[in-house]
Image 1 (cartoon, one colour):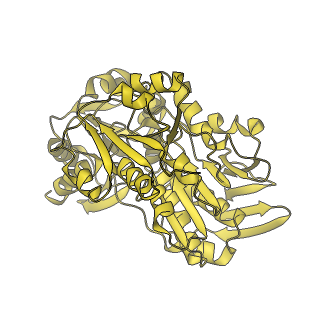
Image 2 (cartoon, one colour):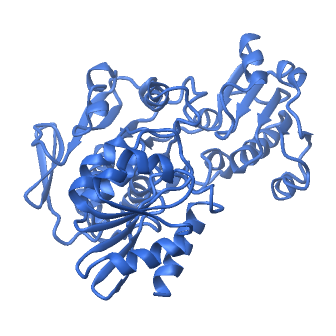
Length: 446
């Protein structure tokens, strides 16, 4: 892809936009960056661009600049229906995402992971497996470093592993992973997408440029995921916790079995540290991607055995008077909370936060069966009360600290207090990490 002297506009100056602007400028492009924030708000990102000849258009998006560009690179946080983008699209100007730009400069196998939940755990585990197999591995995308930083760094890389969000897939046109995994689908980001189907369609774009020489790793147990199996050009490789597979990877009676092209490998799961039914799926998806791309079985499973849970995903905090406390702040949608509830019984669930527009009804069965007490916080408390409040003992708390104190008072020994919000954190906290730290501090002060 020739970039020299091209007029390229980068929209949005978060981490991804900064990395793109720097890369494009280093390739000799005439780069302009645009962001609605002012110079004071963007002090950090602008400092990273010091030393590059880059035009800045701050506190506005100038349509004339969009229309005068040869190429527009859009950051994931920028909505597709931005009027200036729609005008540029109508004028026939090429608009791409950062992963599309990066992929044009990546010439090694790419394993891409998407899904509503489990992406970060699966991506991190897969990266660790490749490294333990001796591959020079770049891990990034929606976690850690933007993919474009791999193209920028000139480091020796044998394998790229990327977590990919629906936002990043909105402006692709040739992005093609060698192996792409879709872990699950449940309602999310309905504050961004007009409908659930639009969100699903964005996720499915991860497969659209694959050919029969590539692999699509699909969750056989997720109805919405599995119904895509017959529609893909890539070779489908399923994983399942419930079905024995002739071709694929599945769990049964304490053993993960991998079957591919007549070969079978078996892995006993008793010593795996990563607990929870959702993590069984994440492990199988990561192992499938690794083994399909040539990793050795022994080193692969050795990595799985040693892998610990990532922070803020069903993380054990402490036990107080026979009650165990778990922090699951990364569970910002209904699907991830469902998986968390599957992992425990006799639960006091602390939930709520900023509403994302989806229905809470899919939680009803699990709440009725496993949740003894439901404590609601934040903006979404009213909606959650309406959809779930009649299923179990339901109470409200004005703060997370108050919710923890209330949970400690009403949960009997042998029970579990689980903070798994099903909502984003932005009504009460800076981000999900601050929410996690506040929960942990409240539990430790009991």
